[in-house]
Length: 127
Image (cartoon, rainbow, N blue to C red; front, top):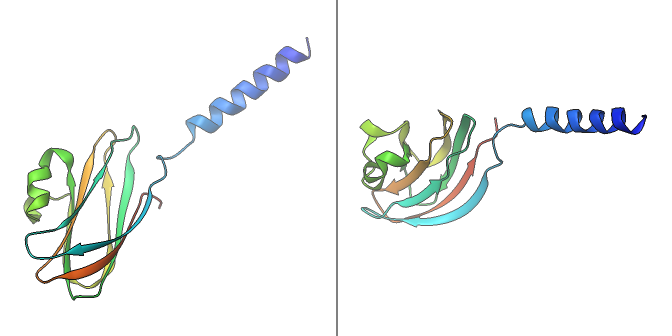
């Protein structure tokens, strides 16, 4: 009889921990070479919970454009059109952009520049 309550306690603790988990961890570090008409593109899979996606960037070639788009608007991402972006930033060589992404929404991150640049990029979904 003692085993059953102990097993139930372990099962309930496991369910409580699983239910309280946040979004699947995202931590991507890359260096991208961007140039006019040739943005760096990163596809992020949909996850079942809402998440805050953050893009940190550091360009050695001057200001960049950073857009976070729904995957459904992927064509807009490739041309860096701000009107369809969930979040769009322009004019900084170093900084970060964050946006709340709804549950079950695949996204695409685009980073471009008006001149050739090496851009250090970090993508996370931690708050």
